[in-house]
Image (cartoon, one colour):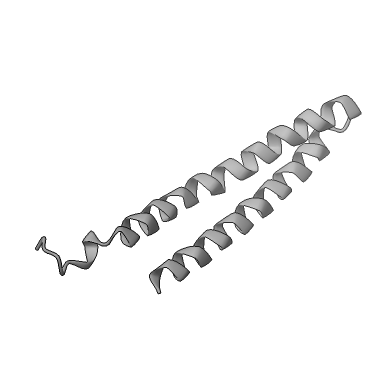
Length: 79
């Protein structure tokens, strides 16, 4: 039913759906970027694998933090 009383036509729902659709990409991109940057930093120092592991852990942490902030902002949009 498309009409002025339809809550699905509210632009807030489209914004919330767009923000929620980014979450899986963030969960993949953060660890990949961390792994890559860790290798770039660790290669000249001679510690490529440990640096990649540290970069991977930092990437996972940053992804979780960003997703947490997005979920909080989505919840605030709902109100």
